[in-house]
Length: 254
Length: 320
Ligand SMILES: Cc1cc2nc3c(=O)[nH]c(=O)nc-3n(C[C@H](O)[C@H](O)[C@H](O)COP(=O)(O)OP(=O)(O)OC[C@H]3O[C@@H](n4cnc5c(N)ncnc54)[C@H](O)[C@@H]3O)c2cc1C
Ligand SMILES: Nc1ncnc2c1ncn2[C@@H]1O[C@H](COP(=O)(O)O)[C@@H](O)[C@H]1O
Image 1 (cartoon, chains in turn orange, cyan):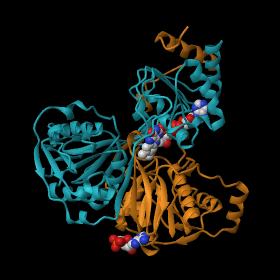
Image 2 (tube, rainbow over the protein chains, first blue to last red):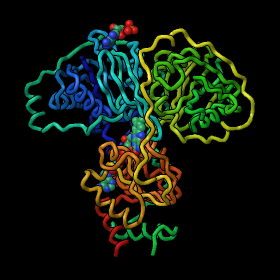
Image 3 (cartoon, rainbow over the protein chains, first blue to last red):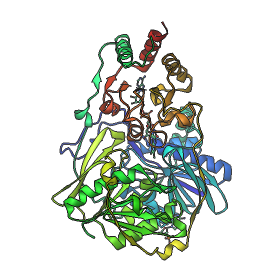
Image 4 (cartoon, rainbow over the protein chains, first blue to last red):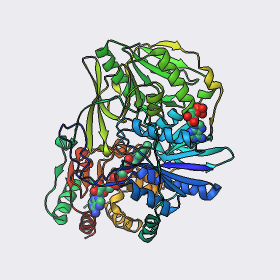
């Protein structure tokens, strides 16, 4: 089974966000980028599927994503068999899905596993878009994948903890919400070794139209409308104030 | 037709979801501005038109493949309805079904998609959406100025009352597309959530912990505070996904909706999926070292103290 796992980097959410001069985009220059957390889950689940059913895991990134090399090498250190870097960038999910679909049309996969979403998906999520472009079935918000013969059984989650088991004929695209286990850790020394060995395969694909069709008027931080009253002082002063708030509502006995 | 607003109904066991009413209420409002109709697409055998009197039209597609939610079957049925009804705007909930269908239809129906919408208006005939980006740290105002568009809307963004108004919808049965006779996907079984050891939905006070706690070993620290307050410990999704607390403690979109008298959040950033589950708490007090985290937009009181200092300080005062 050939499993392809598209990986993407996103701004680290702990960072301070700055906007471009026109105020219609995020200024990416000084941001730190990290692997999209749902892609990390997808990679873990893909490695688990490979361990259970055999096959090959190919991780794929887009060349213009900041720090994508680090992410691809780390994935190889964790157990991916090959890493592919596709020329071009994904300014939007529409653009990313067009590039990935072009790559996958040339090197078909049995199973495409990726994160259910990324934190900067303004124009929608990758897995269904990719599936639609490739004419494949897909399911998102998946928390377990079990490989069968020519199919996979996946558990798709709904609100309130309800879920359903779906049997999906391969090839298919699955959007992972959470892997069956906490994503594994690759020791730094191992990542360094992989980096020194190199071996990211570069692939150029024919550019496809991938506009998202939205007109972004402005982007801004919602903090302006924030209404939390901030409690000052050190931990002790804050603790006193919180106890007082709870006590005045009868939520602390005594 | 070209000015209509179409909502996809979500239902199970003959019951429509809260989000269906939220979207229908908004669809009515938007349709007044566009001069079109508010339409709801209902898939499957259940006759739900009686519960959708607030709609102008209920477009009903039935087929054995639509007996329960199957992404492939719903996608085919919705693409078919969109081709027949040609609405100006399709509204989906930004939950599992909307996450599956929105992006797929954006490609198949060739319509721009605004995801994570928390507000929608019509300006001079053009729908304009306000969307959350980066876990709610950023808002984007986007105009959907193509001749057709899709928005997936975050649960709880709009009220349900307008969608539950009385009225009579015209029912338009639509013959299912032939493509539904072939399936590459089927439901094997539906799994109901397991009951937990404690019911976090009935507690007056919740102590809630997020990824900021950092490790399983440190859960003990907040558990001690919860014990001292005689409150259950609840959590954000990463904490339950990591197995640090049982799934029955998860607050949010895919967990439980809670409405305690007070909700104490420690090390929770306030992603839209988390806020969906606790925004209605009467009092929200949030502790997060990042002053820019979205939890502070809905919290009543906030502190940027380190939880590793604040939590023991609170526990000490309660047990002293
Ligand atoms: C379909 C879907 C459904 C989902 N359903 C849910 C759901 O039901 N419930 C849910 O919670 N999430 C859900 N999520 C996940 C959601 O998007 C977020 O990833 C999640 O809520 C983040 O959890 P968090 O706030 O604990 O972690 P993070 O976002 O990582 O936040 C941790 C916070 O801790 C702060 N912090 C770190 N150290 C300290 C310290 N020492 N003291 C104080 N603060 C500190 C940081 O500043 C940070 O803001 C869902 C996602 C999807 C795609
Ligand atoms: N296993 C596969 N993995 C990736 N792409 C595929 C696969 N099978 C078919 N495709 C591509 O998907 C597109 C549509 O395929 P289909 O609708 O199945 O004929 C074509 O460009 C195919 O090359």
